[in-house]
Length: 426
Image (cartoon, rainbow, N blue to C red):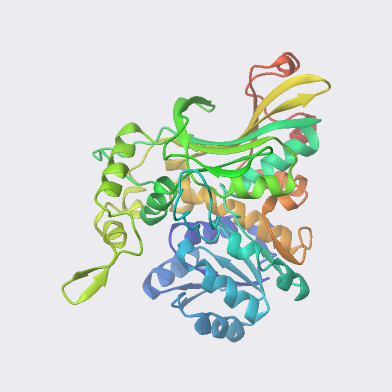
């Protein structure tokens, strides 16, 4: 695979280092062009990785023609999009016109319903991409969208549960929590500031078999969820996220939700940002001779996740909580992956948040490059066989585990065990 990586920030750098650390397992990569609008950042990563397969280049990802020219210059066969989802449409279209495969970690953005934003969806996450499925299929090329950790790895977990752990599924609930602390910082962003504001302040979306997709108020349906690995109980709330769009397209179930652990203090800050109108990316204000959106300004002046990453301590847990029946008994399992921040800093030079995101994309690229995952068209990760992915998680040093929650089925399994016999061999 000759890969054009667009964006050499936290996720992009993590992807590079994960492939590098994989050694011979990463030989599926023939060449990677590390393209970024900040050439020095790309060159810094090029120096760190010290591998002739990785080449730094300057690229403005908002210019479709420049992306196509870069693909042709290096004879790339695939694009990995690791920039903000606000640029997804341009990069997605460039990949199609260049005739190469495409992957992103977060799908095209949603647009609120103009009259009932907290009741009805309008343009949903990824709608713009899925609308182009037929033309991608006709071109005999593949776009694999939502391929990070959430969405991405969590979707594979859900597909694995459907294939191996359940006879029928009631709910698939994606749950993300952590015990991260940044010493000396009362409020810190663990991920892209722009994206965090987008996800948390957009109307959350839920899917039910009887109703289809519908929206709720921000921070709705708070619940306390137990996260393994020493994290413990965390209060989680509804957030707009891609899994709610992706999972019901492929997996037969009755309800799909996404909830994330957002502290009360962080929620208050986000509400204040919204009250001041600083969350709107389309609102522009003049600062000196320049026009800038308040959200872009916040992204610049707030403590950068890249700067605070090295100080952050704790673990993050991403996973899918599935409920239903197996052998006629009620069953409830949480399939998850845990990453320790300081461990990821030492291994990859990046935070666990972005490393978790990158590893999903890297494993999927491995499967695509080796011809294991391939379908012409536009798909999410839950459209493919989950077993090869689960095998490779341990190979890439991000193993998964299963937590059997209280249920009739629980008596047959040990709490906080690794996967059953099939998973043990992985």
